[in-house]
Image (cartoon, rainbow, N blue to C red; front, side, top):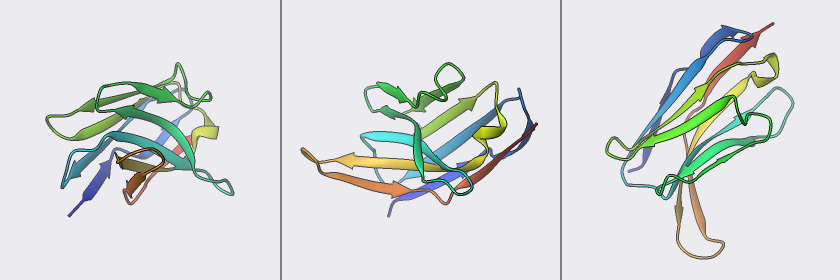
Length: 118
């Protein structure tokens, strides 16, 4: 059974930092990452990382956020620095299995709230 357990959200002032963690159990995933959904907005990709350590970032977080992965612990991390009020959102851990062109099986964490005050 797949389970994703997130931790590390909270309230921080603008310019501050937070680190999110997501521990996966059940199997090893090809891609792990973080999505977020702000108030009144659609869920969007923040960053993801493959099992080969290739990373991908949203333009809005590039240079401020760093995604990393510990395959031995099956855990993905998101270090968030220089946080802005517009980063306020529920952050969701995503883990995906890829099984051919266009075939992606997604698993989601329960979400963790990140609030950045101005």
